[in-house]
Amino acid sequence: MTIRIGTNPIAWSNDDMRELGGETPLDTCLSEAREAGYEGIELGHKFPRSPDALRAALAPHGLACVSGWYSSALLERDADAELQAARPHLDLLRAMGSPVMIVAETVNAVHGELDVPLSRRPVLDGDGWDRFATRLTAFADLLLREGIRLVYHHHMGTVVQSGADIETLMARTGPSVQLLLDTGHATWGGADPAVLARRHRDRIGHVHVKDVRPDVRRQAEAEEWSFLRSVLAGVYTVPGDGCIDFVSVFRALRGYSGWVVVEAEQDPAKAHPLTYARLGYRNLQGVLAEAGLR
Image (cartoon, one colour):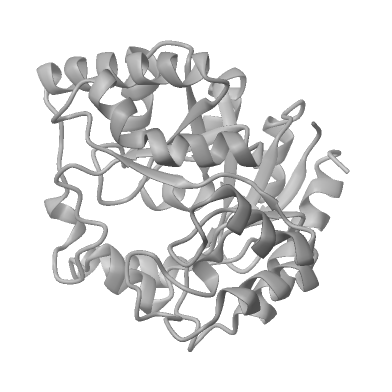
């Protein structure tokens, strides 16, 4: 598998704030994703959850099922309990031939709370990190035995948000835990995604690309906004429409094989999904070519 370009339905309908794009049919999302040029798409809340129904939804558009988000609760339960909870999602991904499971710890997370500022996100102490990293590694080991690689999604408003959090995660977990490098969350969290790409290249198993509008980010931080309020204000956009140096990121990722997913969550009433899907695809193609990956 070389680099394949996919997208996420969050540009059409948001999972954390379901009124955003709530009226948009799934078929519109799928047809426009394919029209924009994407080969695959990640799951969202409008997608069928049985293999036959999901295949029937994707097949007319020629889209692969890339993967799907899974909210873990490893701060509250062990790896065996987590596997049991994840079983329906895991079995669906396996049936669809998805290579990875996207995992993010959401116990006490605030990214889905409109009125809770990011400054109130959960932070782990030393013992908390030890427990979490041990359980996450064990969970990743269990998934790997079933043919699925765990890719950990660092995310604003969760226990793995900052550059220091990412470094701690990678240092304390075993090799079965791979990193989902998300350019937008890394940048907003204070890390350089190109540095992360160079430092952790051998353990990066999945890539999300979105850009950051620095003026919105500055205001969000100055005024103590929540994650969702920042999204509504337009903190994220597609690659090439913000401040991130994507060519440097992908030069550091030479040799990467897998999906690169445009995942730029915006208010679809303000950012027309097909327009931005096309822009993101076109800009990403240009970045990959300039970085020598196309």
